[in-house]
Image 1 (tube, rainbow, N blue to C red):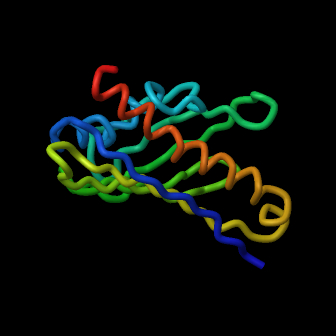
Image 2 (spheres, rainbow, N blue to C red):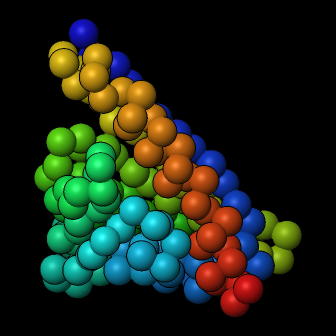
Length: 146
């Protein structure tokens, strides 16, 4: 039996859309606002197919590989990615739109867990996704220079 786990949230950042897109579209900026990222390194050029070697903090503080691959790259509009390593393989997306003189960013994550993972990990995965989405104000502060 499969279980879908998902989270989504938005924030309006008082910066032009091109700056906001540039920040979120390069995951090497993630450690500036995602506290769970221990290390990340892009392989290849920005765009569809780019991969990132990433290590994140897992249960008990241990390091977990969580490499990702960019699956969509639409300048100033959308970036999507999927995990290609690690125990859970979520899909994620950032959407960008002009709002109130700034930029509205919507970040969403989802993963399908099945079998034992659905039973054992769904609560923990949901908590992690909620935490990732909850970090958007930290990205806002970073971009606005607060």
